[in-house]
Image (cartoon, rainbow, N blue to C red; front, side, top):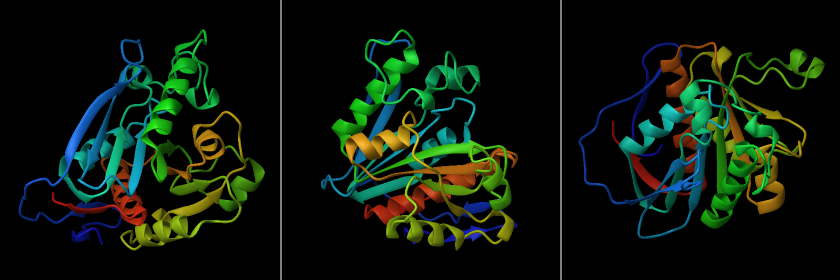
Length: 258
């Protein structure tokens, strides 16, 4: 799996076995979303000589869900892409990330697809982010989030806006083969049954980023939710594992050296 040996050195902590360093086969395109705005945030495209397959990873739509941003930074440091492209937007809502809050004016994940002339910066950021995804045109978009409560079927049935931790979220009641494979391959490296990931159906919401990417851009998109009550180091490691698994399932060819 992605040409590294992954070891679970404790019940729920993922580490990568160090392997010899090698020269990177990809080049990096770096720019920003929302240039010269108060929400200007960097993105990075790791591209080989072959543009496709292509996948986009984004994090920090909610600024206080920080593990995804650190996981993106970790993967970018150690991955070597030799066929295809991987895009990263580690801090979509960079203002909220810097302030360590979920949102500044409003919840960014409640204003998609955005409004270029919106009064709040979140409206304009959502619009600019959608434009970036459209232009990048990946095969898949993976959104990294965190939840305070671990998935529990009974709780989910009582209150469907809770109980997300350790899940992969889809808005389709029919789970795609891509998502099922990603879930199975992620869980191979998690020994604790309590911390394995589950696929969770969540009904379409018109203002969420995932749903707009699917509906308006016709790009498959899924959300990763790690359990926020775990130590930050563990959450980052789970996010790294999920990122690598989804990249592999997308068909991008790479190695990972840490």
